[in-house]
Image 1 (cartoon, rainbow, N blue to C red):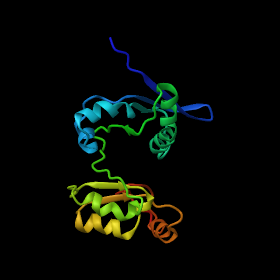
Image 2 (image 1 turned 120 degrees about the horizontal axis):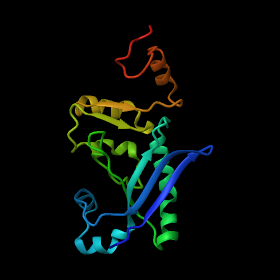
Image 3 (image 1 turned 60 degrees about the horizontal axis):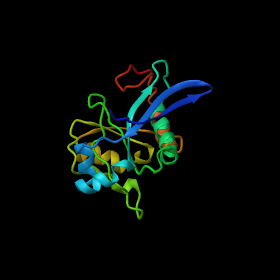
Image 4 (image 1 turned 120 degrees about the vertical axis):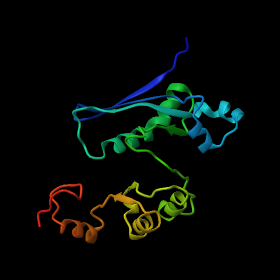
Length: 190
């Protein structure tokens, strides 16, 4: 019987448990990952130990904190490689996690060259992806006219972007709508 080590984490705030995460060795065979990396069988056998698999990620049932999953995962990834080095004797260079396709999925990822930023790469990333009728989510850095127009006009998709306080005019325009609740189909106050 083989032993598979799991590194477990508890996300907590003010002594209250919020989420549980478990990381383990990556599976030997994962077609989507192997195609994305593009490694040979020999290279995969040599470097697979440098990949960690997010085997468990649970937001506890009584916890309802906006953006908690993204925040917990981001904080956990900041320490994962150092913890792995201490526990297993080598760092982690890639962390993989999988999404229930009925809840949503990551359809495309791309490394951003150091000479540019992710804003300029949206079209390059999404051009080959069929998005008609889909809802695309993105973080606040993409809350700009060009990505929105590209998604609606070129890709025939809808979008949900985050609006932060540093986008005062856009935020004011949204507040002027006097929406009671989200989604947009909710009853209007004004």
